[in-house]
Length: 586
View 1 (spheres, rainbow, N blue to C red):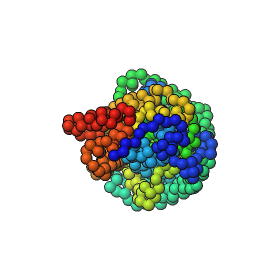
View 2: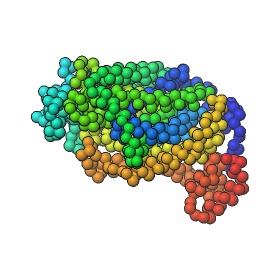
View 3: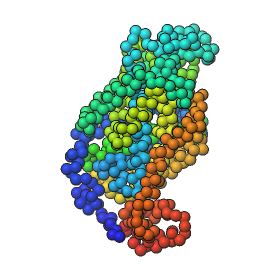
View 4: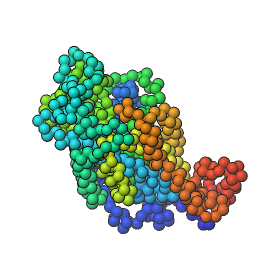
């Protein structure tokens, strides 16, 4: 066995000739690069600044103590969000590879990380494309004299439909708890045409299927020429949502009751910091909104020029992301405060998160404004652009063979069935949940900082940008990020609660089994790939350990974790380490 020597990194060209880690310049030109830095900034901003900033962060902020929620949020941002964000971006820029091959270059034994991210990306495709179809459906219905979710005189309405905004404000809304609003009935009976459960998939909603087809066509034309066409699309899709957000913010601040909504959004409740669920929500929001552990940042970073200052770019993008979430809360809760004022109820009665906010609460709020068609159009156009930007980045990241022939017709079109929303909720709750992401974050941190070497990666980064980042990032990769992610994972398992549709519908046992299969199908790629690689290796245990130790640059503690608990094997490895002088290799 020949052991490769870990040569010192002097410059990009020399290291390329020594290790072959970076592709040749001709291949880079053929692969394509961002024409300008602004294209990269806007592309990443379009990926990380999305629907979660608008419909999830404001709700979590008011739910978990208002301004006090920013304390755990900032802690997770500094210790997990920024370090992982920078790790993936720098890794893509340095290797000039996609989400799978970059991990093969770092350590072939951990290439399963790339496959795991691809599985989650494929699941995320369903999440965003269905939301786009719903948003298009609402957008088309904005061009009516009376918004269909504002009145009860439509064919899909039932006898229990009540226009609450036209009731006497002095009445207690709970008096009508057996009734539903027109917005709820439009969402359930016209948009979803929802069935009684996941075991009643029903027939295809053809109107929704056409909207889904339109969403796919638009996504295709956004990426059909690769990075060149995508770089031009982001100039519109990443900036125009900000225009819409500012318009909705200015409009919301002028409405009666807006001040009460904003106070409710920001009022600090320090006592809530003692609730572990608050910290869990802060951690999952960071993973959800920063698109870490999905491979998207690695792919987008791989199209940068080698000497681009990705360290500075990452801090700028993180500031943009969190700032957008904070400002979006003012736009959302000013309107919710107005709706609570009009109905004479508390804001907690009307505040929702996720699709419930975008497709029930907010449409009901704009229906109470003058020129409701205009404000509804602005809002759903913003939702479409935010979802489109995220979907395009996912298209750009995903391996076409994973979804083009099987996944697209089976999974996506099944969401257009009457019971499709139950499948959507399973994907939302299990496939893209924080549990899978935090486990991936642990593996990524270990692979780069312990297997490849944090100091070695810092040398690579210095070769790219000309200086070494703050040591805090390195210590986060080594210790803090894996520890916090492990604690978050353990807590999520302890506090696990089964999914309930609308907090009422309980899935059958096979539905939960399907959900757990979806959740584990991504993370299981990592151990399966490691086992496969070890089984493919030939030779004795000694040769296998020597190969793994030298070629994969495994540190001593990680070797002990990977190998058997048998004491004889451990002693054998210690002798091997001493024999090959592993400290000089690592």
